[in-house]
Length: 204
Image 1: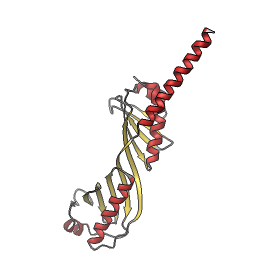
Image 2: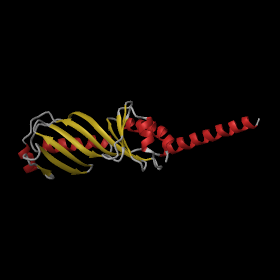
Image 3: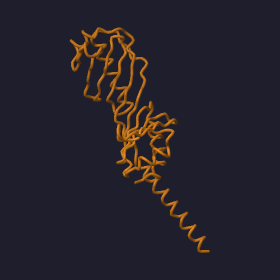
Image 4: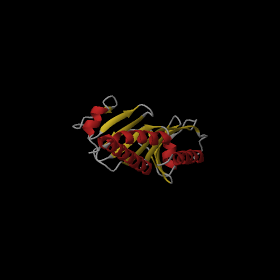
C-alpha cells in the first residue's frame, strides 16, 4: 500500500510539473525582431536618379550595388537594385513588412518609374524569447546531437537546426533563445513550443 501511495504521489507531482510547464509555455511567446521580405518592382531602375531625388536614400556603387533607403513608419530599410528587385528589412510584423514594401514601391513610382508591386515574399523571420531558467548546454547538445552544433570556444550558444518546422534556434545558457530561418510566424511559435518542451529536462 505504501508503495502504491508513493507511486500515486509521484504521478500527481509529475502531473503538476507538466501543468506548470504548460502554463509557463502559454505565457512565453517569441517576440518578432526582424522580418526580411523581397519584392519585384518589375522594371529597371536608374539608381543614381533615385539617390539624387529621393529623401532618406544613399548610393555608393563602389561599396554596394544598391540604393539604401529608409522610412520611419514602419521603421525599415530597403535595398533597391537596378534590376527592380528590392529587399525590405527591419519590420516587426508580417503586415508591416508588406506595408513598408508598398511604401517603397510608391516612392519609386513617384520618381517616374513604372514600378509595380509584385512577387512579395517573406524570406526570413527572426524572433527571440527568454525561458527564464538557465540551460545545461552540454547535456542538451549531447542528447540532441543530431540537430545541435556546440563549439563554445567559437560561439557561446548551441546552434539547433530543427527540421519540422525548418527553423534554426540559437540557445544560450542564460535561457535566451533566438529563432531564425522561418518564413511564417506560426513556424516560429511552433519551433519554440517544441524546444520549450525539450528544455525542461536541461534546467540548470
